[in-house]
Amino acid sequence: MKVRTRSTALIGTICLVASLALTTASADEPAAPRKAAKVALKEVAKAQNPIAGAAGPGGTVWIAERAGTVRILDDKGLGEPVLDITGETTTDGERGLLGIAFDKRFAHFYISYTNLEGTSTVDEFAVRHGKIRPSTRRTVITQTQPYPNHNGGDIRFGPDGYLYIALGDGGSGGDPHGNGQNLDTLLGKMLRIDPRGGKPYAIPRDNPFVNDPNAKDEIWAYGLRNPWRFSFDARTGDLLIGDVGQSDWEEIDWASAKSRGGENYGWSQMEGTHPFRGGTEPANHVPPVHEYDRTGLGCSVTGGYVYRGKAIPALKGQYVFSDYCDGTLRTLRMANGKVTGESDLGVNGGEVISFVQDGDGELYVLAIGGSVSRIDPA
Image 1 (cartoon, rainbow, N blue to C red):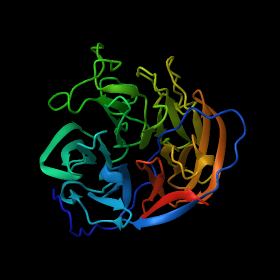
Image 2 (image 1 turned 180 degrees about the vertical axis):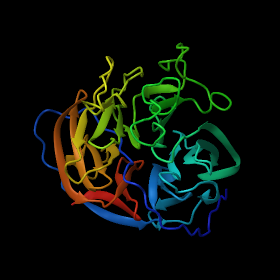
Image 3 (image 1 turned 90 degrees about the horizontal axis):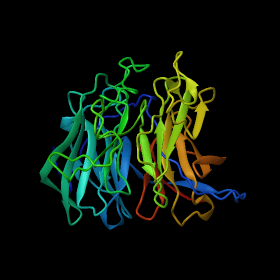
Image 4 (image 1 turned 120 degrees about the horizontal axis):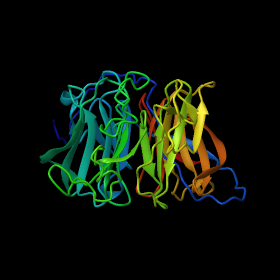
């Protein structure tokens, strides 16, 4: 691991298989018709396979590159890497540096990656004056992965101050180990932990399975296949998860900010609202708020954010998402956890692998080929 302020890292060109996925949606759109948002994509930087990002201190945006580097985006563009773990990860399959996050005070920085053995790992660094302190690095949590795909890897702090971690079902195809519905594994789950409350972390007392001897205490929700990207609505606190489908259906799952956790999103008994390979719908199945099939160009949902910026008033409150194969930016309008409308923003971001929300609520689109673009008014 190398922490740098002015250095250059050469990263090989990579391909990401199209089984990655999406996250997030919102819940406060009025029923009345709204003027359609007109947007444009403005490329603000080029990166080496940008894969994730986070709002950073001082109004910056931090961008993670899949091979293991992190760079800072400001009004001058992308700087040299401030973190380099290229010697500690691999881009085989769907592996690599997969997610980054700051706590709410920008006092700690977290990275989610697969190590050289393929194990999902979340590490923490202290941050001082906006800079990573390498000597403070520590591992918070790990999870062995049986296959090199469906790692998930997105991380984010919720409105409650806890760290949420999305993990896929372990990979291969069809969830051969039944991890999605098995509460005795962290695979196929959304986790919720307190990284500063214990060594290496603490379990929030109100996690839904804390008193269940047959379930892992870290679990917040389950029945997920590959929750590639998720987010919280910055205004309502609602959670939206983009879960990549097996072969027929892509889905977006939603949970109210008032949720106490424990949602079962159905995989691998269900793929979206449809039984998977003769599966039986669980009695407690929480169906997706949105799904779409693969009869068109889409193949892997890429979740985004509910727009809470000021630059595009007509977009406010809509959940923006895309698909890795299709690349079209789309939106959902929602009310009380129900989709009330869908829109096509009329722009294409290429192989959209992730979205980033800055401190002002403006959104950026990351294409695995290298483009870092901001969604601007047209």
